[in-house]
Length: 397
Image 1 (cartoon, rainbow, N blue to C red):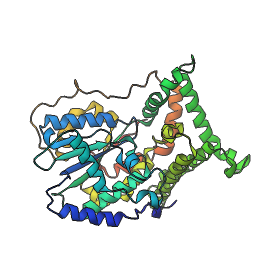
Image 2: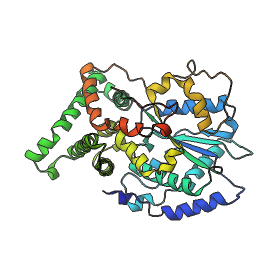
Image 3: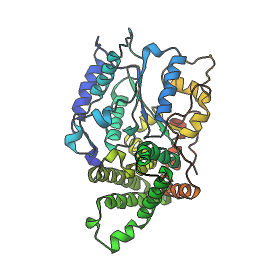
């Protein structure tokens, strides 16, 4: 699959309609001044981020002109396209329909504002992972940046990334713990650790098995996905070696294509795709996902600080230090009132039961180094623009 497939067939028509709507002094105006879409995969900290933003708007006393949505899932479930990227499946997605869906939710909640809403914030965990969502949102972001005055409407993105080892362990418990507890006396921890080590071994040996014992086409369906994951990891390894030479851009293109192809294959050959263990592993490979967004997004959008990244572990330890910058970034006035979330807000949704064994943790750290080592230098090259507080994105291990 090539990047040309990512072009939205009706995107230009839809963008023209959107432009006319935004330029029209419409009494039925439904766009806020700022729309912020939270990006992060399942168990990355998006629920914590949502609670934080909700408390910020209340603290700043702009809650009557703001709406913090729960998970709408417009772009990954409600939108007419499903998983794989074909022109037939992405053509009906629309930013205007997205905002209309938000407006309908607000009306059902009986919320009214006499003025234009200041802020909409919505997050759904799959928005960062689905290639089709990244394509749609970045295309609209580029269009809005080019054609719509910032004084009228701004679309922004707030990404939160969590240590992929901790994220996977939490995801496993959230997805499978209740199922395994009803199937016998063996603890979920033991079952999970066995499955994790088994998957890592499959990834390490898949090339040898596919090249010697059987033809690639005869591999079991899940093994085809693992084989493609291994190819992706190999491309990331090459990027690390060639990050400073002329091969870098070509490799980034290949990594994105490999991510799309692997995701597409996984969606089509696995049963119960969204709860499949292979997707649980795949979600923690953040580097290709960030490439998807930042390489399609225009440089002007990035320079104007409309795409921000938080590191979950740093964020949860320093809520207060992020408050003023995030308040300004979401379009609210600064506040001199004391802002103390430490006693009110804790990292919710991340209890993962039993502690992971050290040997499994080490194996997973090595595993995620294979697909995320490029993440740190890639994000840090945008340091003046995509971080709050002039942060640096630090390796987790």
